[in-house]
Length: 223
Image (cartoon, rainbow, N blue to C red; front, side):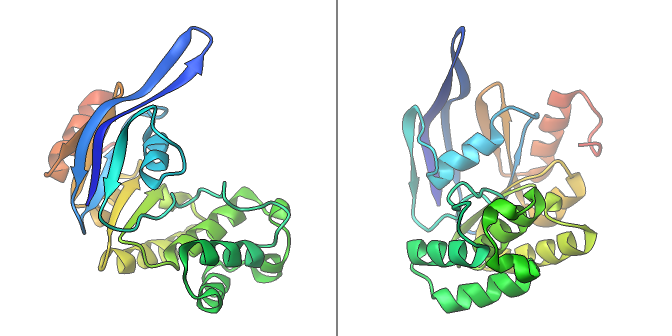
């Protein structure tokens, strides 16, 4: 279970403070896969960062009864001068998992070849995303935070990534950001909509998709 209590996040701008999230109160149930929906730039990735603990809310707090992944695709904890393998070892130590098992899993899954033993600064954005996805999915979390899994690698690798996510969801929950309605319907059973800083949780995925489509002013199915 993940509980948001009066979570607010603001960022300083020239005109003062920009409110990204205001007084969000929600409970994300254990074991559920929840689509996080909202317009581009509404703060979905910021909310994932707050839930994961990589950034702090301006006010309020996040409580959890289980372990939460860092947002898949987030490589801010990776050191650019270390190799993919060295960064994997570093993350394994942070989360207290078997280093050798995680190395073997990531090396096989991410398909980086010799680049796995090269400095991260030499990686393309796609290679970084593959490394991040592999490291996160290689660790058993109670809730996985996933930001646009469909952007990870080419078509074949995306299908491989989605299949792995399906496997993890059989035992864990997830909060998933995606602009693909077919992807959302395949992977999620609840929805949350972030609009104008306000977060609303819906037990019915169809209702969340309908609200989101209405916010965008487009027919449902074109999300």
